[in-house]
Image (tube, rainbow, N blue to C red; front, top):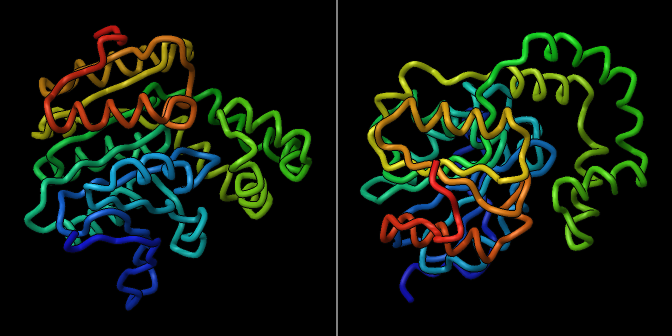
Length: 275
């Protein structure tokens, strides 16, 4: 197949030193799908997706201060959104563009849709928190100061990995990246996550938007999904039965099929409840 990418490739314009590193998979001549990972994990969480979606030009990347982009500026949702928009403008010219975000990455996606309302044709916002918790935000710094040493405890990391549906296949990557994270970086990420709210400009985003949340997620996550759906007439919202926070890792086959059906036919799985 012309344009087939058979291996992981690291590319990017490093002239300014701040261009995000990224990985490409699949068919480089096909439509573009960009994947944005959640907090506590990195681009490896999408391995099962890029292995399945070989007929697409798939791009995964690590957010600033995380994974391969640990040296790429200070993380914020707005900064990340700007850098990923730059990347899409560089490699997505003339292509149908789909962006899929999970948790922290889903918040970045909401911000991207707000900054550039006409850039993304299809968006899948999976488990995005958009209900600011100002009280909890103030507690982050002292709590992390007390608990940060636990990150390097393998038993504690095993428990954390289990809540994120991270199995043995990925545990060592998860543990090693957790051990490498600086305390100030973790505080910054958590504060961004807990203070994020839907930008007013999101209502003007023109692409087709699928908003998903797990049936077993916390009430604040379900409420966030409802708020997102109500903010833009192009949104379709679904509740995925029998799952908590982490459907791409917990049910990769189901999530892969959901992606294809949505971007190709505009259909949602019959097992899901519409918001």
